[in-house]
Image (cartoon, rainbow, N blue to C red):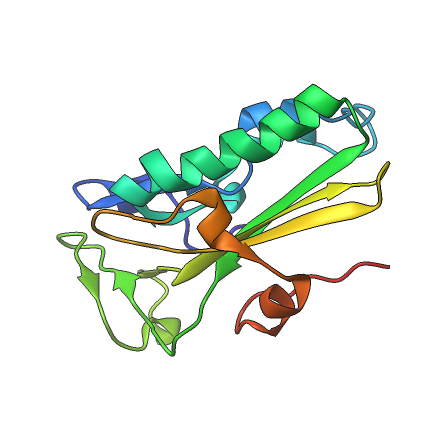
Length: 171
């Protein structure tokens, strides 16, 4: 159901299995009734559908800081909030993790199902329905030392929606 994602793709690679929404973030929100949506809430955060390759330093520092910041806001305010996250394939890159050796290579990986595409950026949106405010963030997927702070990642919904490979709509 999640294309070619598998834990084995990350073995010996320089990439972390970066979660888009953490179990902590998912646990902040109301769980769906058992029969209405299988795998909803905290359990769905462990699905490979919720994971994309992230540079190690980026995942363990800057993305984690953004995760903690958005989850802390939702927990502290106790407002009706939602956190949305996802990959962006931008900058005309087609970097992939190759199955043998797990190195990042550039090229057209869309024709080879054994390769896992590496996002150039990630987005995260925190929506506070009670105050009718939102915060949008775009973060570059660094492979080396990541230098961005949460405030450096602030963006707009338009920027996220206009990014290649990221579609966010609200009814």
